[in-house]
Length: 326
Image 1 (cartoon, one colour):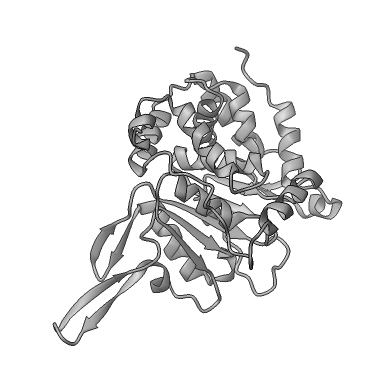
Image 2 (cartoon, helix red, strand yellow):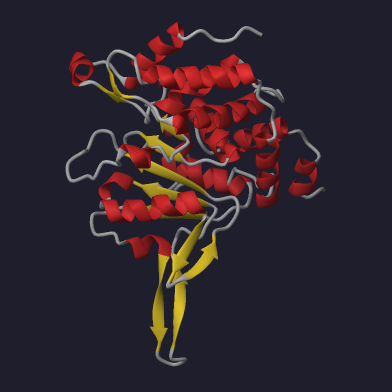
């Protein structure tokens, strides 16, 4: 039997993504669109903000994804008293050796689940976001590279806002995608309940059906292939026009910055690979527009009072901004 890395190395990038998605589905019932968006972010080299009420499988998704490539997984429960050093690590003085020794924090992993990131104060949030940007940690003047691949999946509870510290727009901009996890359909929820309660004591997360089908090195290899996909100038122009339209659209108080266009192109490349293509088409941009832009805009108070969501406004915008023809 071949090693998973040998098998995957000779497969197209689309086949690698399909195999990983198939393995995740063995543990996580439904949520197909969520899985696809998370895979897009992973292979585009970005980070994800997950929003949904507790109990919809966010931790299970991240643990299953880590297992597919044999990656390390860490989880930090963000709380108001969490310090930056609790995230990144710190130096300790060793009385025996009379030297400072570095204790690395939980960010030294492949996949980091930052649970309820908006419950920690701004200083701690900023420490994590700096790590996301730099890909390294500095402790007592010494720099330490993070493992590759490295990806942060931060969660927010949209219901409980009391005692939280909302992420500023400039920090939200650091996330490639914002993915909404919704309640499952009735049939999926029935499968979920049957699967979790079948011969199991307690509520431990079971990722035993998930197999390791690739390696961390293969993830990096596929990332390089995704980044190398050519994008026609007309597609880039379309992405830029969409982003610029958010700055002038009625009802949007704050539009997306230049990172919005960059996110559209990066995510669209991964979307093209998922669709088994080595080129980007306008539909790829449309497919990723909501998760790539929903956290980069702010609605005016009038639309909020009318009950409209950012997704409603973005869908209307997508209808009006003309896409290039093939």
